[in-house]
Image (cartoon, rainbow, N blue to C red; front, top):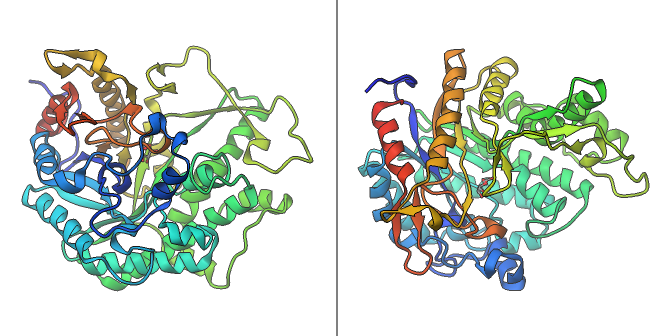
Length: 462
Ligand code: GAL
């Protein structure tokens, strides 16, 4: 077999998951409630087919067989998250010993299979009690998070060297404070910017705590959904619109995480509109001295923008969308099963940007994947023939390969996700896994892509 696209030695092949989306056991093992448990209890109708987070994919009970499956499909690395409300019910205070046992078991099982664990500390899952105190709007909650992170490094730092503070920290901002798709369902840009800012302070405090532990070979970073903003045209108004979208949705986290400071232009815009967040003395230095060692890049789809067609209501609430409109490019390639554009070159553009403007920080594709509804329709001979997923992964990998050829510092590729899982408000609507999950029986079945990725991992290329 000839390998046309060969990846660097020790390339990371694997997948990503998060606690709430796979563990289940939401009310077992001593776990406290997080905002998802609470929101589902109060408004189950907002979740696709009323499916909630109680059971999800039952990884809590099935981690052993699942880790065996990871090994079978060639994983050498795997990212999961620690549920804050499982480890420290209520968010502060006593550690839950059952959670320590569970996460230690998962780590041990992975290591026994030669799969390196990557741990993420926050994946949209604020403990409910802390949300009641204002969540990320409250600096006390930031302190509680820093202590939680510190406990994780103490408890698991002897076996785990790759750490991440947050997954897609902008999503709780967008979902919870701008566009109403996460609890607490607030729509208020001023509060949104405070939440975004405080999240970055929490990140920096976790990095600071991490440094104190001196974990041999330990590195820490953050996982960002970097969505390139492509302008409709080179017309100055379109270009400006795309630059501002980039400031709000990418650079608002990327710059402080990697460069240790916010873009001046973003500060200027927020100042002009009276939306600067409240800061504390010492924050600037904290951010500057606690930048990320590594960056996880989640990439699903591009953001295409154009100049605004209508002036925003000057009396209406300030929103990032005051500066641009979304643009539907004619002829774009679509994942028609999910309604998202597919633009594989985005991976390359992100990587080149990191190389040119962010010191070529070590990075990897921490999520990329294709959600598809009703995949049973593609079953033949008992197996989901997900050729569309194989093509999706292959075409993204080609561009990643190209970026590496050009000197980008990309170290791996993780699919979202190992198995079908619970995707927040969409619950189990869109399926993303290498393995399908039958929600009645919890039975896992490999899809065609599972065998394909195994060959890719074995050959370190394709
Ligand atoms: C990402 C997120 C994941 C998962 C995925 C697929 O943005 O990090 O938690 O839900 O989207 O929808």
